[in-house]
Length: 154
Image (cartoon, rainbow, N blue to C red; front, side, top):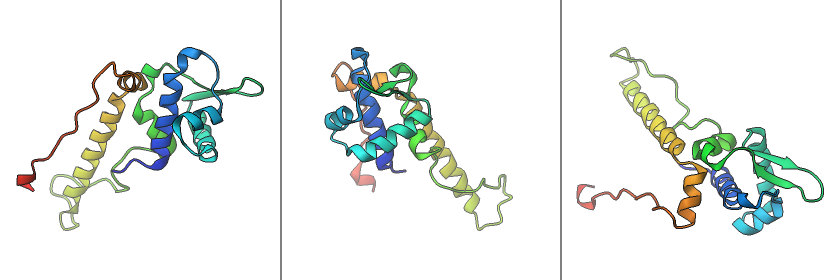
């Protein structure tokens, strides 16, 4: 699975809002774009999708902008990614036949694996909340460790 540009940009935008939520004022799209170095026109589209998913709320007019609609501890990376990219799955496959009923040259075993791995990814993204990312960004907690493969087994 590869996180899309939309998923990455949406995550960065909401992390920016979470990092500044103590200010308790709406943040303009241009402020978010400047802080995150994201293109403003694309960011506007992404924020509209996030608003539609109920992750941000907006205020119009002078002093307007965007605010998180929930606490950072109540918004997961899975919420963000699925809001802009749709369901988190490893592929667009049909449900596999089970218990030896596969009549597609064993492909159903692979379909079951793709489904299980996609579910594992979704659960991992559910475990990371915006509040965790804020603590990591501020250096108050460790970043996740990258699992390194042993090159001798490749």
